[in-house]
Amino acid sequence: MRHALIFAAGLGERMRPLTDHTPKPLLTVNGKPLIEWHLEKLAAAGVHYVVINTSHLAEQFPDTLGDGARWGLRIRYAYEGSTPLETGGGMLNALPLLGSKPFIAVNGDIWTNVDFTALPAQPAGLAHLILVDNPPQHPNGDFALDAQGIVHDEGSTRLTFSGIGVYRHELLQNWHTVIGAAIGADEKPPRFKLAPLLRAAMKTRAVSGSHHHGDWTDVGTRQRLAQLEETLHH
Image 1 (cartoon, helix red, strand yellow):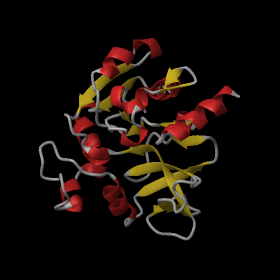
Image 2 (cartoon, helix red, strand yellow):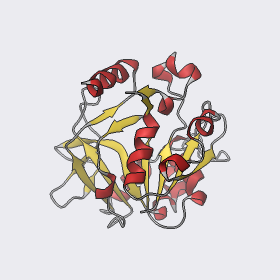
Image 3 (cartoon, rainbow, N blue to C red):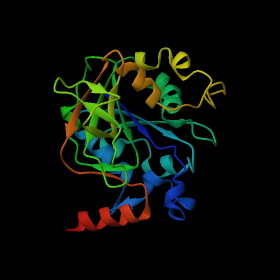
Image 4 (cartoon, helix red, strand yellow):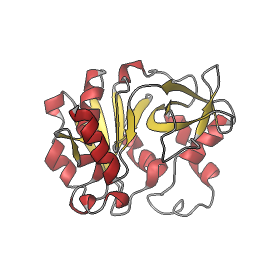
């Protein structure tokens, strides 16, 4: 896999006032922006082309990250407008920049030691998701992973979606049929979540997954950012 997408368009409302002047993926931890940890790991995994979708304080991303040359990457920016398009709309908006092959997508506001080189270049189905143990703030998880590595919407042992996956373009092919009349779906560009598309694909066993047992943090609050900073300092 040579291409990747980083979701970086969110407003970061739970992180205010830190995000009043800095987008959440550009908040620093252990001396570097959250998003930079991803860029380093993607480059090390052989990715050479990264699309970053932006909205809130969008101009700060090219100002901070430039064209990606310092990591051996080529970075393109997909501006979503002043209102973020959610994960599904954001991915759809970025697709024209991502080529035709499966691509990695990563949430810009997580920190993890997931090995991107271990991700499948060609998912068996429409998507491959990295799942993690449920954190305290999300005890009920998102999806279930069976012994064959297939992800299901329901199951007795549920895990949390890490915000890291590999996707085929075909996942979004009939997005409007799945999303229906959800708020934002008929706007231009459309705004919708990715989860309903994944759940629809799960019904046909078209989503595989793996369980990451290592480090992972959803940096969604100032407290979790401070905890991560402390952890990485030790």
